[in-house]
Image (cartoon, rainbow, N blue to C red; front, side):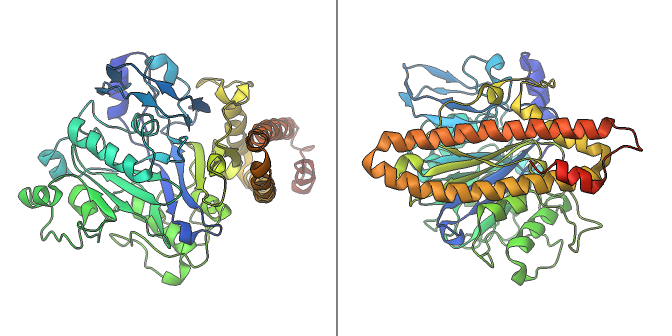
Length: 490
């Protein structure tokens, strides 16, 4: 992830994309590795600056006329006969760039319960770029969810379609992305202009992803591995590996840059949190692609990983780039739950701003309308924008981080715990109601999510008022930590 700001000028867009220097962190959890049998794909969307608004939206299903489909970055593909409905979280300025270009939609679930989270940026090494250069108007993060979500009915179909596009039209970036449905999850990696690989995450394991290509030790002939045509032949021809092995193939080493502490520190940290019994040394060139967790993983566990720092670990004094950074725009944890009715299997836990100082709100996929504040605002602060209400809390907290950051985290952690319990209880009610009145169940799920978006936004605004009041008091009259703690107990 992600680009510098998109503007109306195409030249500025191209310049912005080429200056990309940002990074995300992600996690994929197999259904046998989670506490409730759900598949989870999760990611922080990080940016190069701290003030880039995101909007919640729902794209309706539609029939299309034959012709060209112009994606915002100059990519043009044949227009599909129809689009399936899906949810997304585009950049605030997406609608101003191109009438058909929906920029940086980042994540979503479509009406067939296929989910996409895209992308985690990854560097392509010089040899791979020379052998198969990146394509300027090819597949990039900005278009992947928009391109795939409205077209596929299964995760594997999504992987294959994306691979077909990459091979035919080329890719403009090195990336990792995640595609899942209720049955399986895939880690997809783009390594050069036309070469890619995808690996099915084992049901009993998870994948921890930073900003380097991760796929290694995989059998290219396995049914759980998909890849570009003639991949092995290409690697041998251009000598991208000293001794390429089709039964234990190292895609990351062939196409990416391994051993970069900016990335491997986060990989170690995530695996240390979920599989401490593994006792791995820090700063290995490559960490296991998949690991089994010590305990089954919950949504709260995923949130803890996405908000982690190196505090209390071996890397506390020297760790590079933790998961929690102040330039987070949003974070999402997508659950795909086979034990729920089809229309309610997808659930997106969505936060705005920095995850550690924000709250994950559960959004059922039946929700198609959002409070106005969640699709309002630009990159300039506004009281009317939900993004800005949450993002401003971190900004205010920088005035006294030792005091405010722990209080913000404690406040939202308490709220999230409450939401986890509510969803667990509500799910049982929804399943029961669905049997007798399907529409009533879908309406109840939608109303709940809409209400939580409104309520948590009101909480964020209230917290901001209290922090502003505390900050503007004179030094002598400023609240003590204990006094402020009581005030923050909403």
